[in-house]
Length: 451
Image (cartoon, rainbow, N blue to C red; front, side, top):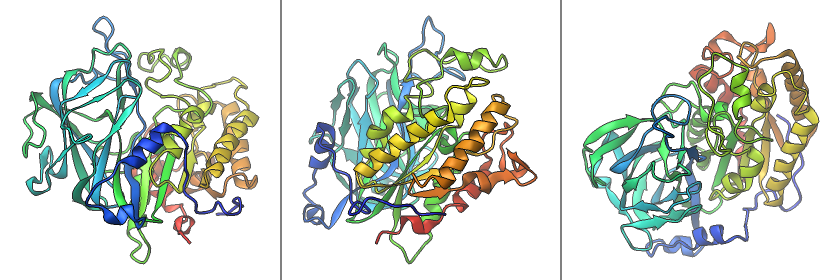
């Protein structure tokens, strides 16, 4: 690892964004948190995800990859999120960022998960919004719940209930969700079942609907890492319900350091995401006849907005962020197939822009080398040449504050354009659980020590 130079005086400063959204989040208070008001504690994200769009069915046909998407109609969703750090006070953010119609939330609830769809009754807490049980989340916005006293352990499962009296398929823009949750969530029978110890389950799914983050009260100075990336950060091909993404393994490694303060990890990876371009559109799949049907044309659907366009919202505005890890551009390269565009220089310019924006907010930002992809369906020799050149820039330019060599951690030493067999999941693009573990093991934890 090589630590680069950070602007003097910006090394451990928190970002302050002069925007209405962040001001509103900071204004949320809780009368039982005198320490927070005195500056000894602060909000830090313990879990986050990056929403995209699930368009409503068109003529009865789902618009997305995979099978029939979830449709929520006058039902309660119990969604499971896994914390990184713990705290005694919690709040939840509900997002309708991509909607064009208001989102009605009839009731909400949070508790520690007991097992499956069950919750620990002793931890059950209603979530209020401005003191009210119901809230309307306007199109293009989000709502942060009031703070709730709840002992939230580190590395624990929280169950967040949302009763949605409307129809998630009614908004012509679609539902705001995260596709690759890789965690079983539960859809109830009709009606408001928020807070039920045993949810009457009508179905299950592995996405997160309308949730974007969970914050806890943590000591002032707690470090918070945001991991920005594509499917390899999102955890594609890892075993569901085991939290085997590389950011999960990183969170567990950080928490195991008894002599160090806890460090939060917030994962905003999106499967298929690119740095320079939005949703891949038809071109990718037209060149791969064995792939599923193409994603919808909505640039916010399936693969989400580009990393450049979402960086400020999904990285800089996370609560308590002090560090950023970027692992992204393998899709910029692979989805180009034989095309010379984007060039390595264009990729470098995109990454440099993100570094500059992070530094402007006083954050440390680390660059991850791109992992091998020979054997993947979109592998081309020209793409491998770009990957090698881009990785050389990451390793030698000094633009990022440090380098995390994910490539070296998982590549086959005898054939460095490919994964080690044990570290790939079968498609030669996404790591196996052990591959994700090896990636997390490659990270120098001292990079996150607060001084």
